[in-house]
Image (cartoon, rainbow, N blue to C red; front, side, top):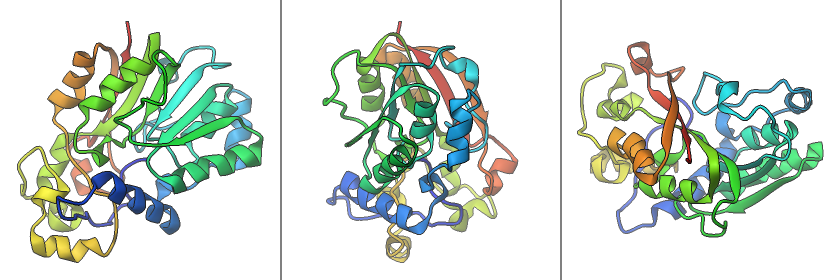
Length: 272
């Protein structure tokens, strides 16, 4: 799963409520509403992937470099982490990988099962918190594919530690995440039109939205977002034990800030 549709407001809720449960319900609603990151790939994408012609997204526009993947995809054990929606997982499965999807949203996981059943693919799905992969044994996977989604949890370092644990030696974590500078301007309606600095970093929907704004946007029932520092995003991967071997930047399509600076970062990190 990735960041929400353009021009959808931020949402918030009282601190005493469970963020994970709220975001599970919110992403289920995004599936109902047809968010672009919840629309399953068509048969033509799967057919091309079976012929070896495929690409997947860690961020919004730039395809993940093919050299970030092993040359041989057959029987590669892949964990698509917080990556439900019927897009990346079935594509990688059609390319020959053995794919497991782990996501917080039952409706997003249902999209992966829909494509798998339609196309005769073997894709396993599990529901859970991206910060807790305890259902998987140490060194279970050769590759973890983690597109822009850690903005939906308040703490990101457990994601890196768990990804490191479940990867085999020599395995790679491919991750996409938001440039934290994105959040100093608030949502598009709040500040991106004029690009006036509004918030200190790190940003949190529950803590930083004004009560009036919170009241206004809660009816939309969209996912809560959190910025994370580069120290936690990049430094967190290094502290978990990874070696960073690749990095690129990307931009939103419909955000004015993206006219002036990259709004996404993607990394490749290897477990030595």
